[in-house]
Image (cartoon, rainbow, N blue to C red; front, side):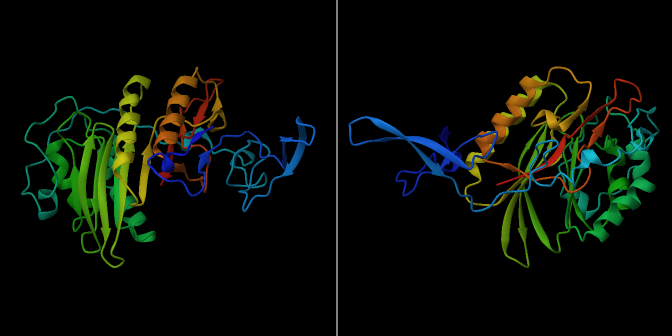
Length: 318
């Protein structure tokens, strides 16, 4: 048992706040109490819970019942899974004048030749562009993040103006990969970019109507374990600075799972990566929100015994 992360900086504790990890919630516990003879006697103490989340007896996950377990539902055929494939670099579109929205973004002059245009940028000019606009309209979104667009810097203006022309955009081309784009409706919210790393963008969002502030960290974790350790360390450092402001971290691909119930199929030894991810969440005090639809968010598109499903996308809150 260790002290809860929220209580580590407290000088005076009116009540104890401890973080306890258990595999099964007991109905009672047995403690040793001093008796009249100077020794100790076993005493059974019943345990009462103010609230218990629903738990699936099949996959042992919290947040839904056995009847609602996604594993009990038929999986979608692999052919419906979108796979990104590299395509030859297409000629760059004519340079357009930067709009007011794009001028707010951080776009250095240097173009990284290793970044290729793939199916994502091709679809962003047609189906993908309409899909983003439909999602924004359907869910009344005022803030979105696009991951690994892999769009050439010379095409940024054309793509952004074709998706949400009246929104403001932030893209980071200071490093290779341009993995995260952020866009927001500045008529309703203000966004200040506070910190940018190769695997995350950390920003402060002010909602005009509510006069409320929230911190959002959009994450796209690296593929290899060693590089992801830098992400875990940066999140731990950010946790110290958030204070009492609501914090949402994620909304993207962490490229890591919390436990083996989030993996289905043949997988290598991921215990080290899994333990490091769990330790990061413990130290930051973040909580993982339960899924509302499909349990797995990634598939390797293999139809044979190598088929592998994982939950790599999630939202963490504090």
